[in-house]
Image 1 (tube, rainbow, N blue to C red):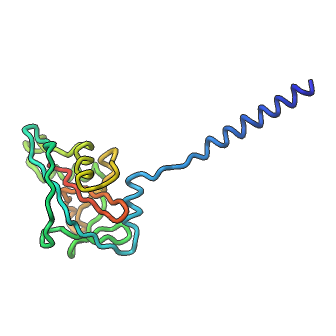
Image 2: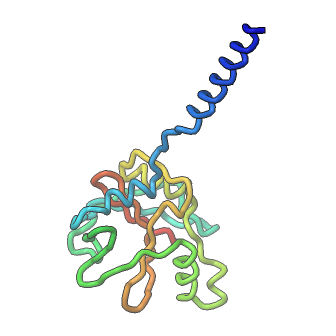
Image 3: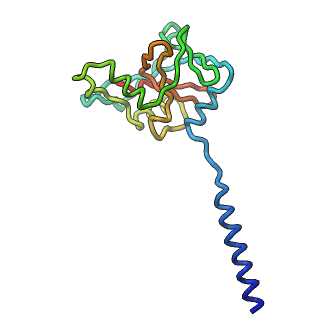
Amino acid sequence: MHKLKIFTIALLILVISGCSLQSKKKTTPTIKMTTRQALKPAEKTWTFTKGVSSKQTKKQGVADKLTESVISKTDELSSWTTSKGKFMSGSVNYKQVSFKKWQRDTQKNYTKSAQGKIHFMSITQVNAVLKKLGANFKITKLTDLIFLETKINGMTLPQGFVAHKNQLYALNIQC
């Protein structure tokens, strides 16, 4: 009888300690968290040096063949400044918006007949572009990207942004 009580108590302690160990999971940072961390400093200037382009396919998709090119310093929006998560380019300030709001506002720029023909890049296509630019990570959903609109008139940018370490990537999601 005494051995049974000791065995039951030992089993109960084992079960309780096993349950408490399972609740202490280590969380892996998401791409969104990594981007926010990279954009956190008081001020950081990002200059784009490479671009990737692709021809459109008949089904309004990006072709598998990606071409890398050099971005000129005189190109519009070739550099960005971020400050505590806020984006600036030239004298224009931008605010972050959700993917749904960005998608809805982007479609407003088109006529009703053209709205159904708008194509957004797939996750596979975005990851192919990131790989071509030398990124060693992948996104899992388009909401991993940061979308912007101007603070003054709410005009959306066609790009989605993602940052990793000291690299900022701007991807033209709408094609």
